[in-house]
Structure formats: C-alpha cells, structure tokens
Picture (tube, rainbow, N blue to C red):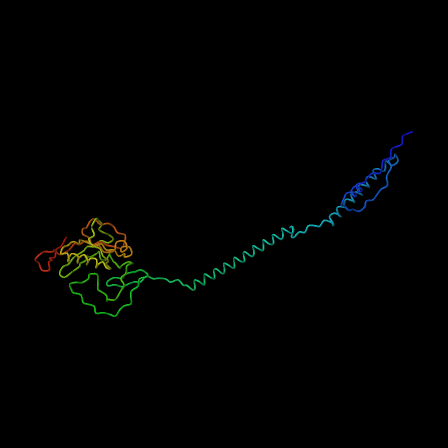
Length: 309
C-alpha cells in the first residue's frame, strides 16, 4: 500500500504578506481554505492559480488607487501645449506687443519734439554783403556789413594833374574797411592797356601780367593793403617820388583778402627788382615799371621824365 502523502500547511497568499507590512492599511484580503494536495485535486491547481493571479492583480490595482488617493489626473493642455509652456508663450507675445507699441509712441513724440524745435528756432541764412567803395566793389565776409551812411560831406575837388586812372570816384560815405572777401578786379581789361600814374608833372607807366608774381630773395621792399589795383600802382609811384629815385620797379597785387591778409599781412607788395615771373593761383596780377621820370639835381621839382624801354 502506498505511503500517505504528507499534508503541508496552508500557503501564505501575497495579500496576507502585504497585510502584515507595517503602516499600510489595505482592505482585508479574501481568505481561502487550505487545499490538500492529493491526486484528486492536482487538476484544479492550475485553475486555482489563475483565479489567484486575477485576484492579486485586482488587489494591487486597489492598493495603488488607495495609495494615490484618487485616479491619475489627465494633463491639461492649451492649444496643444502644456499649460506652463502656453502661459510662457502668451506672456512673451504680450511683452513683444507692448515693446512695439512703446517704441512707436516714443518715436512719434521725438519727431513731434523736433518739429516743434525747428518751428521755434528757424534757420537764419547769412547772405554776403557787397560794400561799394570808390571805383570798386568788395564781396566781404557774411558777418561784415557797412555802417549806416553819415550826412553828405563836401567832397574836395582833385587836381587835374592828379587823377585816378581806374575810373571816376563815387560819393564818399563812412564805411567799415573789410578784411575778408574778394575785391572787384578785372585784370583782363587792365592788362590790355598800359596803366599810367601821374603825380604832379611826373608820370609812371606799368605793364600788367595777370595771374603772375615776381618771386625771389629780397624782392619785396614794402607791403601794404590796397583795395584797388590802381592804389597799389600809385603806392609804387609815390615811393619813387619820395625817395627821389626809381627804387620800386614793379608791384604784385592780390584781390583775395581772405588769403593774403592772414598769410602775408597785406595784398600789395612793391618790388625792388624783377626776377622771372611765377604763376599765381589767386585772382592777382604783377605789373612792371616801364616808364618813369629821371631824377636829376638842379632841375625844378627834381625830376625829368625818362622812358625805361
């Protein structure tokens, strides 16, 4: 006779083990009666194991739901984005819009302020002032203007033998002498004829070369400011008359006061000798003495006219 099978004690289920863990409160598991292992119950072991598997799965789901307190919440989205990203995007759009609006308003206010400033402070346009002088017109500095004319005065009548070859003398008036500008100088017209300067009974004649100058060491014997080409020639003739010799043999005259006065202190220079001529960029001319009186002792007035050519 076969020996009887040993009957094992009741099996401990997983729910029983979980119930014995500390600090966990779960619904009490369903207890099962001990099952004896015998030849007659071997076929039902598989069915019992499947039922126990489903039971444990149900208990595990219940336990997880109890631990979490409720079912998992569905994640909230806005326009397909998570709520945090959606809020950040909306805030960024608002900042960009506000910046654009603020920039437009600021630009409009700045433009309005500039227009207001321009309206309150209109631009003052300075126009050159033309000063009329005897036998010449001077284009002076924009800040230079003639003084108010005074009352007409008696103009002395010049001697017949002491005339200005540059033209008639205009009426006298009080003027402010310019120090900048271009003097009225028609060199082309003057160079076509010999320029004569008469002092008393003596006459000096000069031939004119436009845009030229006599340059050399010690060539200038005197310098001054002259407002007409005739005044410069007259200075040379008077220099010879007072010196009682023909020391001045020519002149150089520049019509550009703006460059001549600051650089050279004058625009009319008397020449002690006549070297080779050099080209001049400014509106200017050189004149050579070609006709002059001869100074002799024992003769009335001390001069005898002599041609140098």
